[in-house]
Image (tube, rainbow, N blue to C red; front, side, top):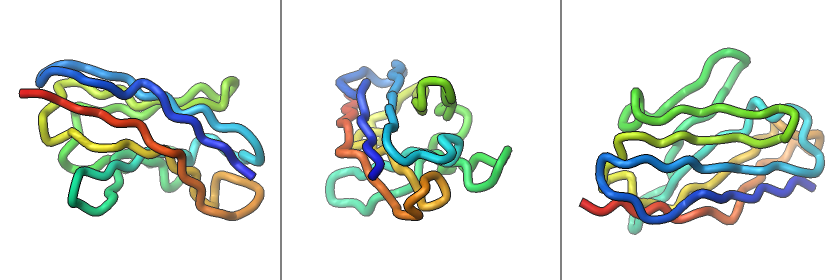
Length: 119
């Protein structure tokens, strides 16, 4: 079993910043592959940032240059630094541990943290 606990969401003004954290526990084999997705109201869940292979991180085009994915391997924690926030970034942000990240080979999701950006 893998548990993912997100934190750091909240209300921000356009142009502001937030940092999301995802603390992973359980059968995590490689924290490097844990990433972030988001789902806006009425929209499908979409990729925000994730490493698909070692050294190659994919970002959504809409967040490139504004969001940065990082991790603290010792703490099994992944971060998403979000700068220059836009109202379009309003969504529930989910931490994702894909099958490549854990010993169980299962796709896991956190419960999500809400980010609201006001104009």
